[in-house]
Length: 286
Image 1 (spheres, rainbow, N blue to C red):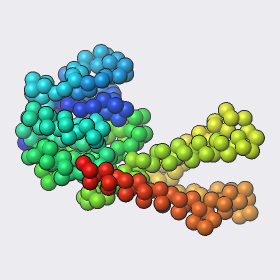
Image 2 (spheres, rainbow, N blue to C red; image 1 turned 60 degrees about the vertical axis):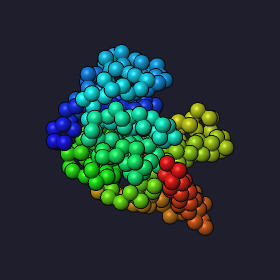
Image 3 (cartoon, rainbow, N blue to C red; image 1 turned 45 degrees about the vertical axis):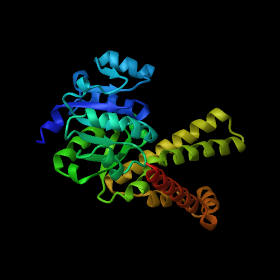
Image 4 (cartoon, one colour; image 1 turned 90 degrees about the horizontal axis):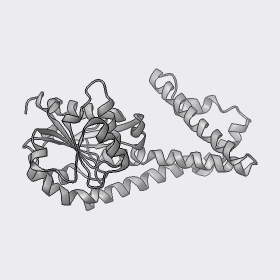
């Protein structure tokens, strides 16, 4: 398929939950490389109020399933349903998609081999985004099968995924389980830390609303500092931590507790390991 074909045909979005809806909204508002209502078809049997509003505003076709007529001209397909749903709908999709249409999957645990069995002969890209993508601040990691290795397929995937945030590529699919454990599940770890920090502030006598506000602003601000240091290549997480930790000070007293006997670093290591194992387990069932 020529490179131009992968960028000028229609896109079929299969599933419009939180991440699917974020993708659709991002494509429609993007000024460069975006989509319009005529080039996007969304398959969602249970459309939300947000999807109904988006489809009405942009004139998008929303269908309960991909019909043969709706599939005409589709050259990119984004799978954004729950992993357990794809085996059933995948068989129908495979019979209706144009030959050679690019499949981009954001399904957790769905490997290239399993997807290749469902969509034989198709170029396939497996991607793992994360929830900050819903506001354009996420990161996605992707890998392609051999059929999707040509640069124009990766460029087409980049163009669709970049509305969620940065896009990185790996060449070894075994890394995808670790990616899922670090960035895919990672926002929940940060949210838990913020929640725990707020509750700890309450325990020390702060009003709940103030404790929550302080915790959220602290996590958000620390993240911005870290992002700035990374972009400028002036400081990493360890350097920033050392910069705010005066010997014998309050921060040092807190970190002594957090790091004692392995502490928080070991807890996070074990948590990521558990998530990685679960990702592999989900992949084996798929």
